[in-house]
Length: 248
Image (tube, rainbow, N blue to C red):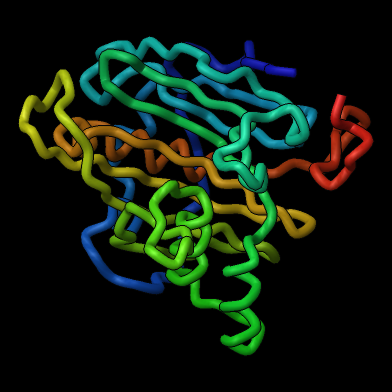
C-alpha cells in the first residue's frame, strides 16, 4: 500500500543525520557536504507496509520549479514486482518519473547474485563497498560479454558508507545515453545516485537517474532524499520477499 504522508507540508525542513566514513574517491555527489538548500525544498514521503520501507522525494527544484512526478510502477510486494531480467532475481518494487526531466526514481529489491557470492567467498567473506556496488549494478544490467557473463554498463565514480549495524552504502555512477530534451547531442551521459540497504539477505537499492546536464541542478535534493531512505520494522502487512506462498 502506498502512503503519502499528509503531515509533511509542501515545503518542509528535512532533518537528516550527518554521514561519515569516506571509503573511496572521485567527484561523486555523495562524497560532498549536502548544501543548505536541500533542507529548504519541499518533500513528500512514500511509504510501503508490504516491504516496510519509506523515503522522501523532492517536489520542487532548488530554484522552486515544481517537479511533477508520475508513478510508473505502484509500490508492490517483491513477489508481484516487475523483474529486471529473465532470472527474476532483481525486481522493481516501485518507480516514479518526471517526464520533463527526464528524472527517474526506482527502488529495486533482490538477493545477491551467484557472481556476488563467489566474489565474497574469494575475498574471505567481506567485499569492499565499491566491489559490492559494482556487483549489484552488474546484476541489474543487460550488457553481456562473449562468455555470457552479465556486466554493468555504468561506471561507479564514488562510494561511501553510512552508520549503523547494517550501514547503508551510497554511490554515484555514470553511463552513456542517447539524445534527450535537455541535451540533443548524439552521445550523452546519464548520471545515477543511489543508496543500498540490506535486510535478511536481500538488497534494497533506491536510485535516481538523470541526464548529466540536469543532474547538477538537482544534486542537493537527491542527497537529501537518499539519506532519508529507511527500512522499518516489519509490521502485520509485511510480505517477506522469500515467501513463495505470497506470489498471488
